[in-house]
Length: 223
Image (cartoon, rainbow, N blue to C red; front, side, top):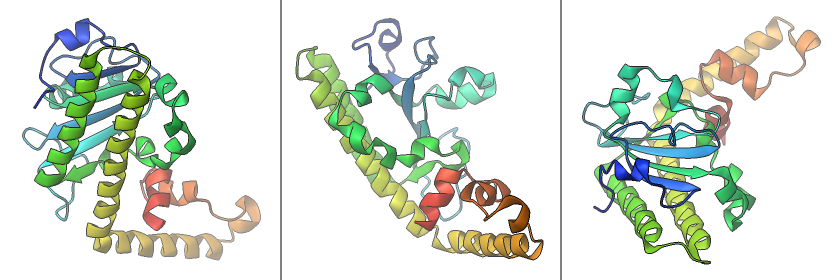
């Protein structure tokens, strides 16, 4: 595997809009705003991140939007991340590439951490290969093709993550059936208490908040 726990990745920027490596330490560069982050965490010494008994146990993938800063984590939280592989890329890289047109399809950047992706060993190998491909391109050197190739490799990585999340919704079918039943009861109660006259029709935000889910995860579950 090419991606290694090399602190030089944090002290020297290979590309101003993207960084990749191992979180052997948390640098100021990593917690700057404006970056999307994907963290691949091994099962060992890993918190649950919402893992259920029906989920795979080999690794977890956490997605962080630019609004989320690791600086708000406690020292105990950070200890879970330090041995993780990460990919960090700035919104400007997306905004100047073809992926911008459908980037909103990757709604898992708006999920909560307890709605993380839990993957099998086979899926983990696929994702680490994608990380390696991006690392290879970064170490090639910057030229006029760099951003095109890197954004394409990021898109491939995200498409695999989207596939694996779809699989996770399927393997969680029984759990999701319970959520749907709770949603139905919540809506029935909403109409029974005549909240519609005061607040209008119940929204996905209303339902997801009452179910302790992010609205993005709630909507994707129903889709």
